[in-house]
Image (cartoon, rainbow, N blue to C red; front, top):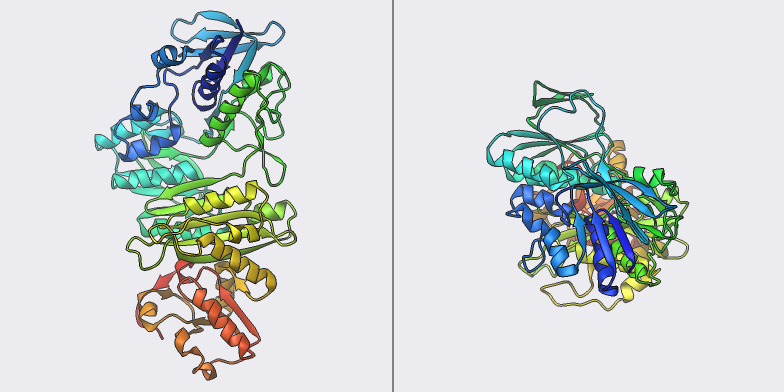
Length: 564
C-alpha cells in the first residue's frame, strides 16, 4: 500500500489529499497540521468579524452543513488528519517525516512514498516598539477573528487602526466600520491597494472610502505602538492616533524553513521552487499553496502570489499527479477582487507599472458606464481600465471599480488574457445580454471599442492625473458637456478654467471656444465628452482630448452647486 504524507491541512493540503483519495481508494493518506483547526475558509474571516457570517464554524463546513473536522475526513474520505502536530524534519534519503505532538511533546516518524508540502505562509510582524501589546491582531487564523469579534461584541473597542491598505486591510476597514468604530487605515506607500492599482483608480477608491467615514492615510509610516498592557495609540512619522484595536496587515512570507532544511530548492521569490507539475527538485515531493512560487502567465516570470483560489487549484493538480496523472499548472494572472462597503474593486493581469517594468509598449484606456441599461432600477455605475500591447493588440491587464457588477467583467478579461486574446476578441465575444444583467454592448466591449479608437487615433484620452496637472497650469480649457442639472449635482472642484456647454448646444456655441486653445472635453463618464471632441475636431479645433472616465471617476475634490 502506497503511503502519502501531506504537511498542511488547509486549502492546498486537504484539496490534494481529497483528490488523491478519489483517484486512489487504497492509498494510506496522513495529513499533519500544527493547528487544531483545519480546512477553514480564511478569506471569509473579515465577514465573520463584520457579522455577515454568524459563526466561525461556518467557515469550516461543507455546503450541506457538515463540519470539516478530523472525524469528517476520516469517516467520509478515509484520510487520517493529525492536528496539533508539527512536522519538524524531512529525511529525503529515508523518505520519512518527523512530527511532534504539540500536546504531549512526543515525536514520531511517518514514512512516505510521496510527500506534499503545503505549509502556507505567515503574516509579517514588523519589529516596532510596542508590537506585543494587547489588542494588536493579525487576521490570519480563525482564533484571531474570534478574539476580535468577541471584543467587538463586548464593546471593548471604540477606535481601530489598520496597518496596510491591501486586501485584508481594506476588508477589515469595512468590517470594523459596520461596528461603528472610528477606523483609520495607514499605508506606507502612496496609494491604497499599492500592489495592483494604478494611481488614478487607487485615488478614486480612497476618495470613496473617505466619503464613507474611513480615514485613509497614505505615504505614512508607523513608528511605534503606545500603551500599558494593551494598545492605546499608534504613533506614525506624522501624527499620533488613538487606537484601542490594531490590525496588522502588512504582507506575508512563505513558510519554507522545513523545505530549506531538507535541501529543497528555494526560488528567486523566496518561496519553494516547483515545476509546472508542482514537483520540487525532489520528484517524490510536491508543494503547493502559499509556500510556493508560481509563474505570471503574461510575463513568464516567477512570482509569489498567495491566494486561496490558487491554493485550491494547486491541491487538485497535485492530487491528480499523485494518482499518476499529468496535470500542469499554467500560472497566474494575479487576479483579485475586493469589496469596500458598496464599492467593488478588481484587477487582472498587468497594471501600468508592471507593463513598464516588463518593457511593454502599451496603451491604456478608461471608460465608465452603467453595468446594465440605465433605465433598469438596479443599474449601477462602474469604471473599467484596459491595458493593451500596442504592437500585438493583446490584452495585458484591466482594473475596475464601482458599485456595479465588476466581477463578471474582470473574469471575462481574465479568460481573454489566459487564451492570448486581443481587444478584437473582447469585442467579438458573444456575451449574454438581457437588461437585468447587462447592456447590449457590454462594458468590456465598450472598453475594447475605445481602445480601438485610441489605437486608430480617433480618441485622444488623458487620465485624471494628467488632467489635474493641466488644471494647475490654468492654460487648458475644460469643457463640461453635461446638462445644467447634472452640473449642479456634481462637478469638478478647483478648476478655474471650466466651460459649461451642454452637448446639444455645442454646435451653436462654438464661438465661445478658441480653436487654438487646448481643450479637454468631459461628461459623466466621457462618452458625450468623446462626441464633443469629434464635433470640435470636425470644426478644425486643433488640440482636443477627452477626460477618461469622466466626472464619475474623478478621484480628487468635487463640489455641488450652480455651474458657472
